[in-house]
Image 1 (cartoon, rainbow, N blue to C red):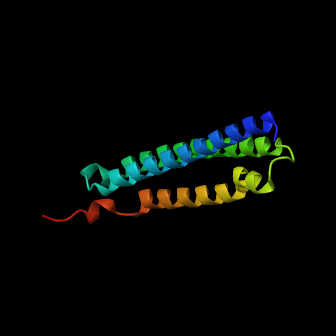
Image 2: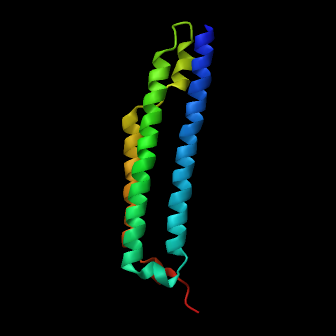
Image 3: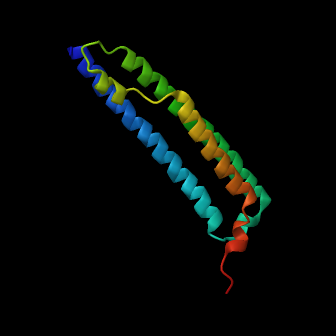
Amino acid sequence: MTEQDFEIIKILIDRGSYMNTYWNFYIVVTSAIVGVLASGKEFARLKAVRGLLCIVFILFAASNFSAIHNLVSQRSALADQLTSAVPDELVGTLRPQNFNSYATFHVLLDVVVVACILLIPWHSMKAKD
């Protein structure tokens, strides 16, 4: 392998770490929104609050999805720059999944979260004293 291959591999590993960061941030934000709604607070029953949370989540999800799309493009372009001296098994572990799999998974999760925000009567799940 060439020195350039080693540098590209380092960058690919770094980009993979960023991908995990974006997914972890997505999980944290989603959990926070669901946690706020599940807290049983009175404001969670207001349609305006739920609508605002839904809009904020959709904007966040679009931004997160865009960042993931950019990372997948970067990682694919970098993996294409590796020389044939790099073993195929290593290249396979560094190359990202097909972008459609990321898109399908993200959109599916987005739909589930929006449905949770708009359709679940969180306020009625609060334990009665």
